Image 1 (cartoon, rainbow, N blue to C red):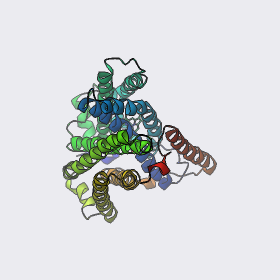
Image 2: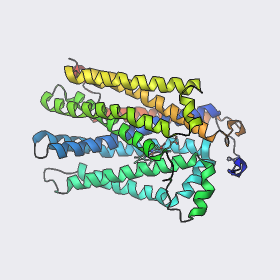
Image 3: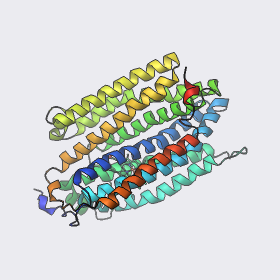
Image 4: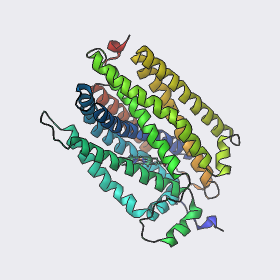
Length: 372
Ligand code: HEM
């Protein structure tokens, strides 16, 4: 029988802001991180699909290079927006997160190497001029595979951080630090849930790109819209299978928080499912009626809300997992408002700066032109 007192004690340093502030920031910054990751990974996968499906045709190659050019920027956003939740998760769950990171030490270290290699490959593809290297498709596929592996390592570490009762057995069965959390029943559905979401949101990214080009080059924009919109549709529809697989892979007591035992978690799940359904109907209508505005504005807003809802559910699930070992009252709080305000101002300015950069990239800048 596992003794909860074996879990390391939290850092005795007081929190510099109230607990709920960190919790809120963790959820919001995680949602931003995952959105950027989805743009990057989903964009890369769909660029590869465009190249593979329409090899040799004018649009397949054009879509590939158009999207591939934007992938390094989204990679940078993923990394920068990953640092914020990394800080908050260490503050709130350091004793769990550090322990699991030690247990999967080598794959965890490997993330840095994989990020650098993937980044290099993405840059290689995006900097191709008129004379394009033959291996461009293979390099893109290689980098995208590395990113898929990075996501898998994250899911391994984070699932392990939530089950302290499995740590000792895992450690004593092999002290090499190479072991992943492969025996975890939620691992595969959870990972697939994230990766399928990346394809859906990557599809939305393509819709936004199509929207920005709608007026100048409608035939080409329509091809991107069809590819992105359909990817969004099929990926979101398949989430109804993968999501329920994930839900039913959870231990019963934890699953029940979403099925009536906890009113907030249950309401969020219902809202998330309805939002997904609404986005499917909206996207399907938009594709049928060739209504780029409905897809770019309507579906994006509903999906952004859905990602925030699911990020909150993920946090509630973590709290349910850690309930026997975690007591937020344990934290001493000594609020330091001035550094916190500086952080907040810089954070908001940083996010605003990203929007300016995206605008310069051609997104969000042709609102009037896109009206039908
Ligand atoms: C570049 C490729 C990356 C991919 C594909 C990726 C993907 C993911 C995924 C799928 C998760 C959720 C795992 C789960 O809950 O099961 C996650 C969580 C997280 N990622 Fe990333 N990530 C990447 C890079 C990074 C980097 C470079 C950082 C840090 C600088 C980072 C910071 C985080 C943090 C802190 C969490 C957990 C937040 C929490 O538990 O609330 N990620 N990432």
